[in-house]
Amino acid sequence: MRILAIGPRAYLGDVYLTLRREGHDVRVFAEDPPELRAFGGLIDCVDDWRAELDWVGREGVVFFERVGRGALQDELRARGFRVVGGSAFGDRLEQEREFGQSVLRDAGLAIAESRSFDHPSLALEWLNRNPGRYVLKHDDTGRTTFVGDHPHGADLAFMLRRAGEGRVLLMERLDGVEVGVGAYFDGTRFLRPACIDFEHKRFFPGETGEMTGEMGTLATFDDSETLFAATLDRLASRFAAAGHVGYINLNMIVNEQGVWPLEFTCRFGNPGFAVLAALQPDGWGDLMARMAAGSSAATIGRFTTRPGWSVAIVLTVPPFPAHTETALPEEDPPVFFLQPPRGAELDRYHLVDMRLEDGQLLGRRRSGHLMIVTGAGPSVQAAQQDAQARARNVVAPELRWRADIGDRFLNGEQDRLRALGWLPAAS
Image (cartoon, rainbow, N blue to C red; front, side, top):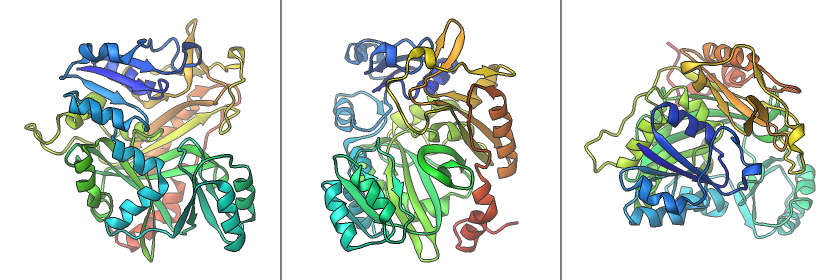
């Protein structure tokens, strides 16, 4: 299959490398200049994606890796191209927090109390009149969410004063189990099975330290139907009306009062793509073909998954979770493997912001976001051990990673979800 990948940089370069190993013909377009691009020396990019449309044709797949290009995707679909990634509707759900909450409310789902503000200064004025613990979210998805801890919002007030420009949303902070449910959508329906996942966003073990993009994830396709049917599947008609094609994840809090959807991710997430890849034996090419074909083709709305659990661990070096564009190339740290992965083992090491120079893998110092390693097994404990063994196989100066991904689930979240009826009772 021919696949044309488009993004602001080769953000999902590891997916493209995997697709090539599967035997597909992949061309990549990235908007940033070559000297700043991830996967330098690993992936060569084309200069103009529009010039490649004749090459990919109507039988290939045009893949968009990030939000913000939904209207363009809808336009290409109208011209007969098979496009996987998102839609204008998906962009709005993720990028306009207030709109996303209204869609959830219209679907009959309970939502946390929240208020949207055109500028952080307006949110600060409101907080001064209504002190309390809130979650700060930005319409700019590149900005990190901040979860307030101070009972009167003093820590949140500081973050609002330094938030810069742009719309923000203050959401009531809810206590409970944070869990995501996600599925692939083919333009008219969700492909089964859905997944459930447990993100670990704090920098340090034990859920301490600053919020990051993500430090690791626990996921499974097993026993997801009950939560999926009660939440994300209720929005299928809205996604079908929009012609959305791609992955959709709904993050939520589950507690004794109910299920509280928080936000959408309408794209292939990171490390979300990696943690699911370990449980998808037929590969990304198969999934993209199923999504692109839609339900009008002679296909069933299911794909093959492995039973059990997957754990993804994010490997970082400084300045992660900060980001600096002033880092010089000579500051990029070398990355080594004690036992170089080969064959199928390559699919468990997912590069992120790295490059290859003179045969040496180098991590980009600008982000410190090196790679994701994954492990899988019949139990959470087995998946943890599998992932940690791969993390220990990687050597880099100042390497840092969390060794407790999945512990939170084992130490209480699993039992709580079982007691509430969202997971089956232990056998």
